[in-house]
Image (cartoon, rainbow, N blue to C red; front, side):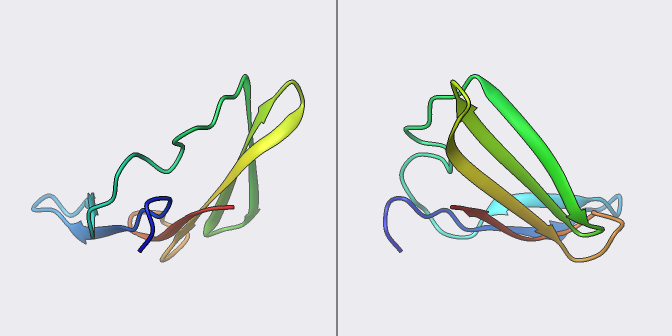
Length: 81
């Protein structure tokens, strides 16, 4: 894994809600080095959220969050592109 990657996982908590945790160590965060003044959210289907980070209308990063189901209680993946 390179320093620009961050892998997240989740597990059920005692109360039945998901608990997000880091699966492996990496330096920084998924938005390291990103400067933005706007966030756009899109929901292309029932299990996917796409967040576009922009600076002066220019896309700086896109974060895609995929859940296991439309209940959105457990995350499958979080990817920066």
